[in-house]
Length: 114
Ligand code: AMP
Ligand code: ZN
Image (spheres, rainbow, N blue to C red):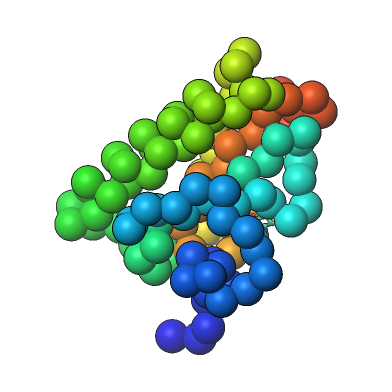
């Protein structure tokens, strides 16, 4: 496998600061935010896209959702709610091939296009 940017971030090998971390999941701010708050939540395990996930990953994918909810619930700009997005494959707009959830919220949230 070629070096994966999000695997490197999860391992703390880049300058990107993690805003949440446990043994299975990490979260950090998107480098090109599409909303006032734009956080990415990733499994530390490399899974390229949702279509590469299997029943083995069921617990981990559930945890990813719950971590997103937990991160959002403690964020002072997400009290009114937020949008959770996972792009899948090139056709779905996925540019980084390591599963990630986008948490989008605060101002500049475009409900038409996101
Ligand atoms: P997607 O298009 O769903 O694959 O989302 C990939 C996201 O990763 C985009 O919103 C990018 O802005 C973001 N991104 C790319 N490189 C970095 C990086 N080094 N640190 C943080 N976010 C990044
Ligand atoms: Zn990876």
